Image (cartoon, rainbow, N blue to C red):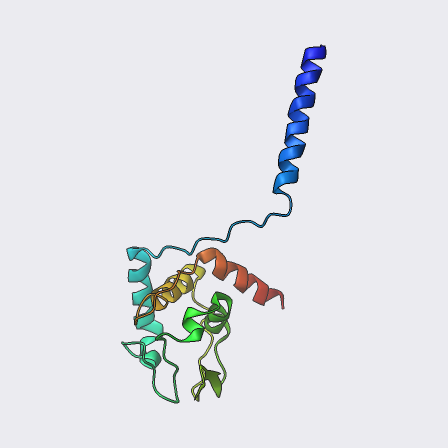
Length: 149
């Protein structure tokens, strides 16, 4: 009986020591989502259907009307902001990287979470852009947050 109690005491003390060592440490940063060929193909298809008319085949946009998708802070920067652009659209007179664009971008919140993740992953990895992909979970979380407002 004493032997069992001693073993339990050692195991319990070891567990407390381990939890104390990990307390206060930050979780490692999430790795960027790897963009697969299937995601790129689906994203390209969605881009062609909903984005190409304004942002052009090369992603260059139309000066002073529709912003470019090539190496801009909106595309390569904060994923939340980029997802919100798709869900909520953009108002006229929006300034992006020092340029003002006059066309309104309507919300595309009718797209499914997977479609938004794929098209944004495509844009972030096309037109000379090299950035991490966007996951369905990220889109879903931001859509849920917008719905609660």
